[in-house]
Image 1 (cartoon, one colour):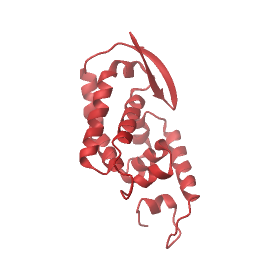
Image 2 (cartoon, rainbow, N blue to C red):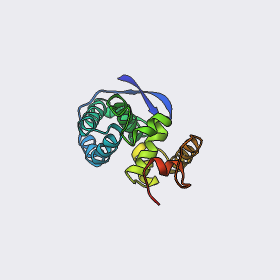
Image 3 (cartoon, rainbow, N blue to C red):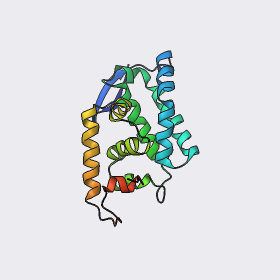
Image 4 (cartoon, one colour):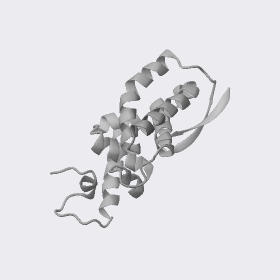
Length: 171
């Protein structure tokens, strides 16, 4: 058994686990999440090539620690952390790409929730399931992001939440 460090709800946990090859349950997990992971990675990186590299790296890393992820409190949380980390490595959008500004203004976890909710238009339950979080936590993160963004100076032609303004959502 080889211990691994994983993150769950912001905490690092050491979990003993054995190396394994991708299994049927891993393949099912990949098929279930691959499309939305790609959409997230595309929003985060701004490039289809970077998005594909991001999810390929994520699933390669996840396959290496799949048994460990299954033995963790929440496999979806392990997978999401790998995806978010991989997107950060392949994050070529350091300037003008619209959704990148959230990663310049917020911490990664809050920005991820905003992108999933506002850009990918996922509901709170789906975001919670995808990230391995509880729905209340997602609501709190969305509220905290809106508050943090509201404290940033921005000139808007009409009053609207900064979160909506940055997302280019018209009323």
